Amino acid sequence: MITVHFTDADGATTSVTARTGQSLMLAALAANVDGIQADCGGLLTCATCHVMVSEAQAALLEPITPDEAAMLDATAVPRTSASRLSCQIVLTDAMDGLRVVLPSSQY
View 1: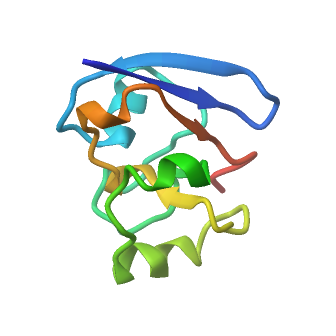
View 2: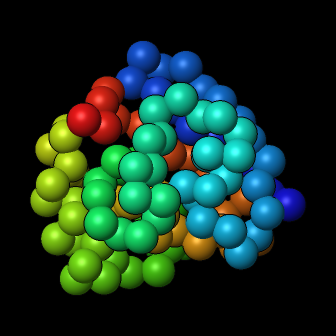
């Protein structure tokens, strides 16, 4: 188990315990993190699980695939260089302490 920290647009942080091997999106949903909608359930057909990962921690993640990059162009809040879809982030032990920022809106 690892700990992941979600910070919302107002600066409030929610810390959750998550299983390695599961997606960041599923960890957020299991912990009822407000701000992750996940309308498609992780099928990479929407952009409602948008998060921003710090540049320092981005190196812990697998590279963005072309499909994820295309979906990030459809986020409600414009994507940044730190934007990722939480459904595409598979948690590993190395990600213990991962910090992500939630956009102000997923719609």
